Length: 509
Ligand SMILES: Cc1cc2nc3c(=O)[nH]c(=O)nc-3n(C[C@H](O)[C@H](O)[C@H](O)COP(=O)(O)OP(=O)(O)OC[C@H]3O[C@@H](n4cnc5c(N)ncnc54)[C@H](O)[C@@H]3O)c2cc1C
Ligand code: FES
Image 1 (cartoon, helix red, strand yellow):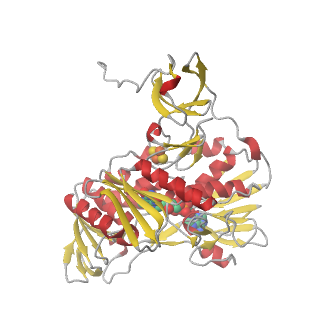
Image 2 (cartoon, rainbow, N blue to C red):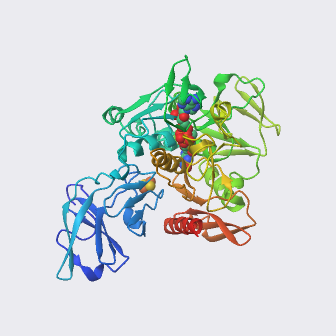
Image 3 (spheres, rainbow, N blue to C red):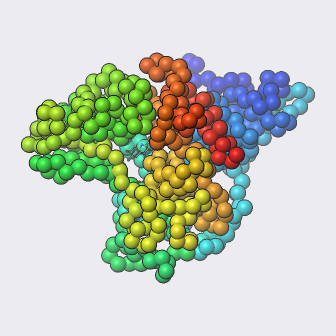
């Protein structure tokens, strides 16, 4: 267009399309006015909803229709085709929804509907006061879902952070790279909490929980009583102790404050050493390269990410980072620091302005443990995310739940899982009995390459590669005893979504 505006996509749906252009089970992308609209058909029903995902603007028309929902191809958010509601994270806001009409063999999209109707199935003041420990993925998603489902009691979120809940995955990606402004980070603007009656208390560290008295004790001695409690305290980055290193030399990345500290130091830095070649370490490496900094990565393994993604994908990731100038020191750890010089265990020496440790995390289970709640490499929860203490739930990085897909109790550190567990625990704290049965999903971004991973494979005996990893067009299946446990993919979003649906179906079987 001459004025620089882009044309809205596809046919004008207000003018109508032939019904034969929309076969049963089909979907197409069109527009109404300037707005892209996804039109979908299921039997005699026609649905019209906004075509742009409210998470990171993924193209819903390229997603997967499952029953009367559509899943986003990028990070698997799920929207109702009937109302536009964001049913499953990572999207938390609805898309618009339009009325669709069939007449004389044609389909017309008519007026926009009001925002998704109140899903007030659970409208309730019970159980009085819900306290959430943690203002991260799980804690925020729980509070949001409680209000969405019209919980009318008190919600208190106690967060040790000094900022309201943020989009944590962005902290190692665009924000750290300098490509995203800070106002992209909050999951909701600060007035959201006030407007929705959510008492968000920042810098409020819970030091103890009295299960019998139903009280959380804050640092400073104040107690907050609860009728239901959600533990969503996340995980703590591992901080290495390296002889000679001063604390200010070694940074970690978990919170917005951590990220700001890295960005501040990066401004004057020429060289940075990243310890650890897993997701956080390598995303940090990519983001610091985007800032023009020389980046070295030291890690004990021979192939980055091999433990999670296998050898072939790991080698691809190594080559990708090398093409972008990252210098690997694999099979080596930091042995000692002398001023700016870091001595590696293989004898190598690196002069670096600072070090970022991406050495993994430990779940913050101390509160649960001290309260007598059952802990075994994570807080043990049942299928409804309730801990061994009735009325106390756990979600996110701390929770070990009985995974109905793999049949084992697992704990993962994924954003989408934490949010979805927060959502399910919200329903259950209100008295619902919804089991958590989602297939674990995560994504990781390295330069312009997104890696999506669905399922859970701690061990496998076969890796089946379809497509071409080096060409960034592949599906990698991790199998044990012939059964697919997990699927990693690059630019094969449809297959990733189909795998998710299959995993979920296998849980129900
Ligand atoms: C930089 C970064 C990038 C990531 N990128 C991805 C990604 O691309 N994809 C992906 O799937 N996952 C990613 N993850 C992992 C993902 O962010 C976590 O799995 C997710 O945040 C876990 O959610 P959570 O609610 O369990 O914990 P968190 O989000 O960590 O929230 C924990 C909250 O608990 C609070 N807290 C802790 N102890 C106390 C206490 N005693 N009292 C009060 N409050 C307390 C903390 O202050 C915090 O607010 C990333 C993580 C990081 C750090
Ligand atoms: S862009 Fe749709 S889920 Fe992320």
